Length: 211
Image 1 (cartoon, rainbow, N blue to C red):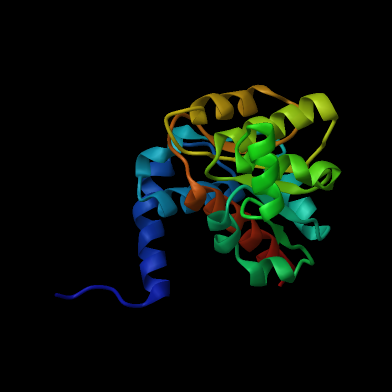
Image 2: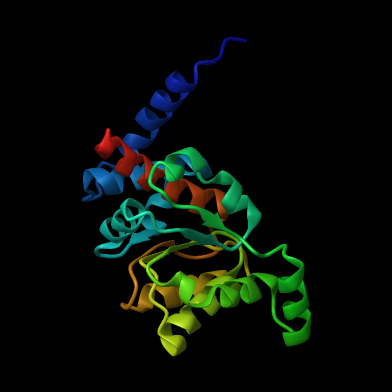
């Protein structure tokens, strides 16, 4: 059986296959990269109408990355997937506390999820930072609460938790607020690979512009 083995060729061909499905959307060149990467990561060309990028979200995320701001994530899968080499060139780091013993203890004591406790523990460190949530709706709900009640102001939120309980609602709430720029996908779809794809696409855009 003959099949492609060159990573660059596989990627090029994948983008060629995806392109026609985005032809009818009025996307900027940078939005097109983000959409394409999300679709590529999901293997689902019908993701396109579900993707929502708020006005100024890409600009805010790029500015934060260029300023060396850190990224705060809900689960290890997101942390692991982010291109650390690209991020390190910009001076940023990725933080995830969901597996910390302290967070486990807080979650039990306060009867909340660990991802929720982890986001709460970051506090004002989230100001000016990028938040990427790919798994836990409760983490996104907590971030939205912190924005609304505590006055926390992240640079941007990539909120794409997946699942049937709370995921769609948390993303709907994210999209309904106008305080913080965001990237999300509607409904139950999403997941860590989607959060990673969106963020890595923006990292690629930023580093390409600097080279």
